[in-house]
Image 1 (cartoon, rainbow, N blue to C red):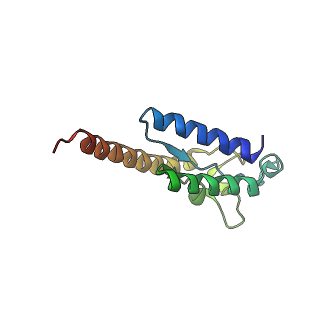
Image 2: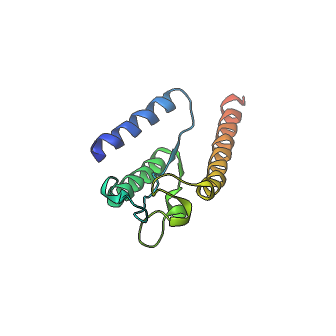
Image 3: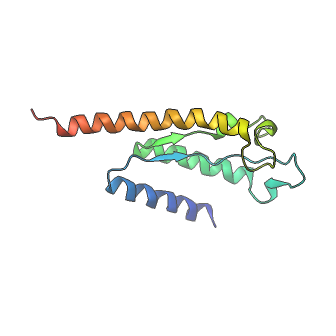
Length: 126
């Protein structure tokens, strides 16, 4: 699947959500690492992951969606997934999920706050 096809799918999901008054939260794609027996970067290009995340972040800014940035927290200096947060190079382990949980909770709280403000302003009569 090309990057253009993937971004088109994200845009379609966001449009459907917005049409149904659903607050959108797009999470970044996680980096991968090659520290195990399988070279994950051969299947999931770190360059393409970064490009998709850059697109997602810009799309969220332009369309006032929430961007949940797991990538920046879980990436190392070599643009790979930090070894201590994944045992297989793709899926987070317990430590990785603990880190992600805090970020997700903040993004959800932000979405709920935005929805609360929207509901107050859209139902208020002058």
